[in-house]
Length: 554
Image (cartoon, rainbow, N blue to C red):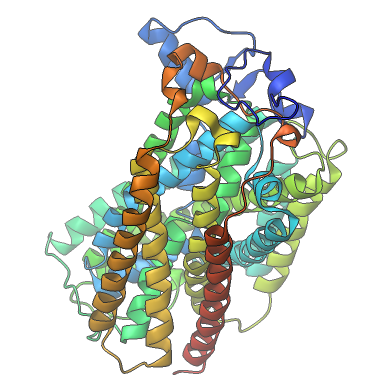
């Protein structure tokens, strides 16, 4: 708590009951952990000495990490991974390998923010950066979420269309199912439904086995960016699309708020990290399986090197592998679409509740949290209407949305990194130096990818490899200069949090946000955020221009 006339003692252990110390906006965020596979009472402070008790606790806490990760492999993800395998063979598997640690570290940071602060991502941005930056972050999120849910309904129509169901029946049925899942008024019921869909998504593994058997195990070729795989710009666009669908901004808002809504506190962070790690392993396994399926199935066929949309992939698998393979892919696509739409819509509802202070909890039904549920309903209704427009370029929209997510990611990642270094908010849970270094490298790499997209869009004939080497070399120099400036400063900083015992650290939570001092003014921080905003707007405009060009046959 703050002392009159002095700074906040953010490292003083707080042992007050969670209901009294957590900065929750909604009282439904305080109480027992009610997971899909068990309950942990709020008053339970006993140690977990036996394996059986630790396993029971893990099963109760499992959920936020699994759901956010597997919802990553949504309709857009399935489509982009399928395109990568069909057009570039196994040549883009390295992108998934590079993104694996980024995915886990980002989601661990938001889970830590949620458990320690008791506040959602949008609320922390408002409290620590002001309502203007909060409005920018919320606006980016809502615009991207609306477009992303459109891709989920595209996935529904393609999947059920493959099975012979009209889009005019498929879309209303999917919308009704999504609203029923979100508006049930039971966190446990919602989580159980989502975990069932998580289980169905694992059908990508037997699908890859089928494709491998049909291909005889021969490796698919890996075309160079300018070869049969398409132009330089299209190659870079696809790489950014993979990054955007694997590490998406909505994930930050979803998992942090879902951790708060599930009532997870710092005491249970080790279990939530395991939940997130398991989700990371499963989402990458699914992504690799889809990419390999299309690489193996279409190698040596007329379909290799070309991509229309996910529906055409299902038909291609039916012809190249077996009818079962086509049906499995359609099932995976349908499941991914529903899982992704539910999670993305919920991330927007959580963020609106955080920004405006409305009730926002899955523990509340329709009558008890109207704005929360109406926000999800609006996303679903808008997306359903867009998808029913005749003649829309569905495949191009899907790839473009994932690329936009990649463009928005540097700005979202910068906010996340700054929040995780705010010791008034996280105290002993703030990022260590090594994690900050890795985070800065990640943000820089994402900015570099957007810059490469910008340059290759302006100069389509330029060599993508040369541009990439130049941009990343400049990035390395900038990061080295930043490290040289920051390292001496950090070496001299005291770290009193190291004096806390594990018990005291587990008990420490953020004081009420309204009692915290405002963050110190920093010209470097403000300049960085402004430059990221300018870069975002420029890259988004050029992306739109490139998508229009591709849509016109350019």
